[in-house]
Image 1 (tube, helix red, strand yellow):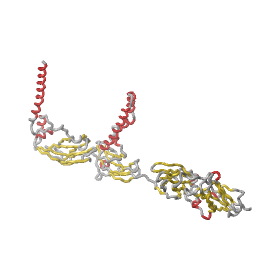
Image 2 (cartoon, rainbow, N blue to C red):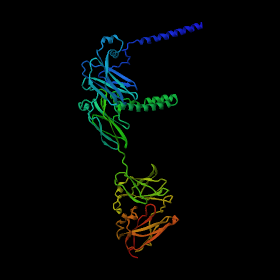
Image 3 (cartoon, rainbow, N blue to C red):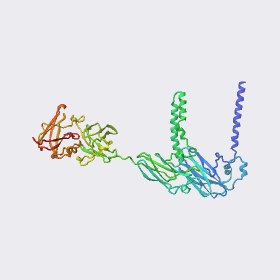
Image 4 (cartoon, helix red, strand yellow):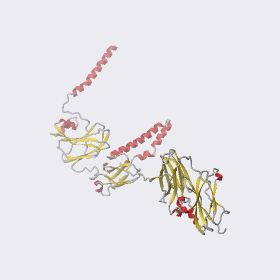
Length: 583
């Protein structure tokens, strides 16, 4: 019984296999002029048709014209990639009868292909720009075939058919010169202009169905509004993918469900949906309206931007693109960097007192140790200057410098960038910045840089910069001065200046007490003496000097300078003394 049932099943399967092959044999006997076609798509007239073009596949659209149509125009607008499209016309000797179309189960193009005729290619185009074919109509027994193909990847395109010789009116008009011109380029803004569209200039002001949309990006020019939307859609898609990843990472089902609810109610997702009344709200136009001039602001300095201008027909939902342009914004204004020479004493001035001006300097120390000493002193009364020292983009030191002498030790780098920035000034002291003793020079900082070959730190300073006088030792022709020194062997120079009998009462000494008044600004006739001094014990580092050759009853101003090999000479506080009239 088992063998009988098995043979019966094999026989039934063989019968089914042979039966399924019969229709194939029958189909091979079909007529030779019956060409199998893809699903037929008719191209409607006066309607914008959107198509999806798969990579490597040809899409076909068929249409016929009315008897009274004198001409036609076909407009193809690719989205973001170049495509190939062509227009052909197949003309028959005799137009097929309508009764044949109704009696047959075949589509109309298949019926047209059964009769004898010829096919002629009328037009072809390859590119990503919007292109339009305009021409006369053929004989009444003609069917037109529009073929579209994308070689690179899947893309989209829109097509439009218009019957008649005149313009279709479905697309905005572009001027003869449809280039975007650059009027001006700044550091953070670019001004553009373009020839106006006749679609906007010919309409009355009450009708606002046309306007311009200007887009700016830092990647490329877009050939159409569709291409710009594709790019915006990709960015939004990437954001959504990041959000989706965050959702999946969430632990525990309860927390995950709550997290989904929070994301769904997030305000950003609600605002992303554009209103149905404004179809182009997602384009993020930097300029929008009917003006043919646009200034794009809030750009980054020293960056290349691409600008596209589209004229949009909001009534028909179409647009046309001007030929875009690009421009590079200017770089930020950078202050000049001044190179400091070895041991150079420099006065740094700020011309604009109403703003926080700044200056840059660079210094290269000599020697293998690559060490140096930066000495600064503010010369503008109570005003402070901020000094920042950096090397290779790394800040090494930053401090505010006032009237007291400041030392900054430089070590370990082949070059240093010195940035001086003036801090705020009180109005009461702004008039004191110009020192009369300096010939009205608006000096703000006194600075010197020098290489220190054998030193390992900043030099020592006196414990006090006050000059002391002894009343008992004050005579008619001489005075005795004393001041603190250091444990290093240094040179001290004493200067004097006569004020006269009434100079002290008149305040004449105030002009000579500037802390920045160095020996280089003094006359050689004012120098009284110079002496070397050194004391290893800082508490006992006191030196004295007897200044003679003075006139009785006269007022003098005495200054002591600590002259060093490195850095700015240190000026002690000025001392005003008056000799005795009678001795």
